[in-house]
Length: 210
Image 1 (cartoon, helix red, strand yellow):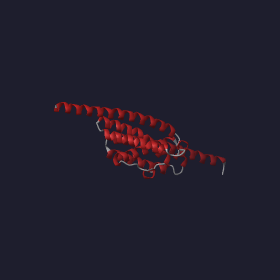
Image 2 (tube, one colour):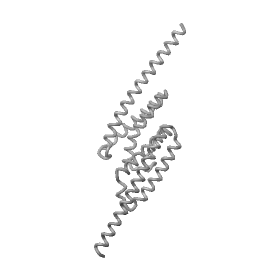
Image 3 (cartoon, rainbow, N blue to C red):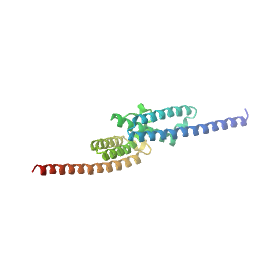
């Protein structure tokens, strides 16, 4: 075989790899977008729409894996990791809202690192849900959200050497701690307001009976 033959074959392989890379990026961008939309629908309590989005995302991941059979190096890239993180976040958040329980990485078929990072991001979604509950006057639901936020934070922080093994986790945990502290402060203020409101009502009832 001539050198030209070898180089021509290499060039063809590189062109096919680049084409596959572009297709993978397109698939992952769509998967990320669908997961974000699913989270939006969960906040609106449109659970069936959220589930439909996540089923479509799961199908995209299957397509992604089939594309990477000949190019396994494409499995590990920023855009791929981001898509799996967003999907994990959406699935965990959905399970907490619908069932009040956590779902594991094997159940939703995501890599462990993507699961941990997605799990940490759920804290932000729970804060949003807590604030929505406060606006609706549902203090107990807001308290439950805070409890879940704290559970996630404590359990993730309890992972030995997690900061070294999961890139980006330290930054997410620092942000999560600030979110939890802010949310706890807001719930404390609301609890005091409710307590004062109840005290005033009791006083008014006493005044009426005199």
